Length: 298
Image (cartoon, rainbow, N blue to C red; front, side):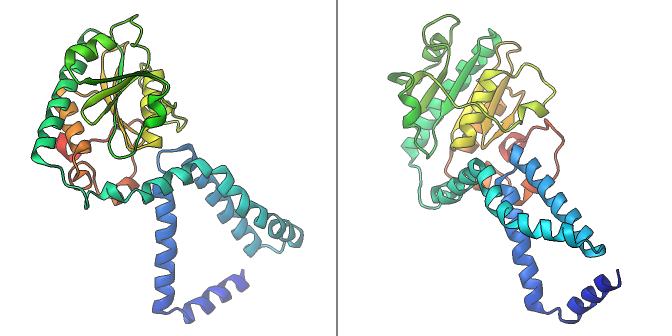
């Protein structure tokens, strides 16, 4: 114990501004890693790893355990290589987000005509989703933003049709050939229907209290985790409307809130209007607590 206090005093006596900068940079790195792994099972795993590291470090520092210290020193190099392998999917997803510079919306400006076409598409989707929810017809609508979804077109039925409420309602009418699957909307057109989406494995739905979230909601979260697409879901059991984006699910939406969320996410200034500062993601949320954009609160 006396040796520990001696080491602490030794460090404090030599503490400089460069030492402070060093600590700040290390903190930023770990904070950024937690930001990339937020709302995933890897985040819980990482917390457990950090807790074990802290406990083992304190144990070795306070007690004279030569055998245990040798074991830790021997295993540590292997763990350094094992952790990236275990967290590979989450790390890959985070690097893809970092590499997508176009998400900042600084180099792309939408024309007035394009905004008009986008608004007509969003209005048509909203009208169709509202009627599908009233009739308890399950639906999953995917809106492509910047990342291409070509690999998901191939497993569905190619349509390349104009987006209208009537067509969307017909596609998702129960027991029709195209109702089981997702509709992908790209460039204000229905590119394909009956598409198979990847299922989420993040465990976000396990934290919610609602039991009405099934395969469609898992598929909506799944595609929002592997891409920047927006997924609109209508529950077949309750008729509730949800929207998934970036691995988050916003529940219990009405027509106005749905339209405002889609506008916020689809416009080029999404970072300024549709999303909060990335520092806000570090605040604690209760399990199942939904996140709303600034547009929905206006």
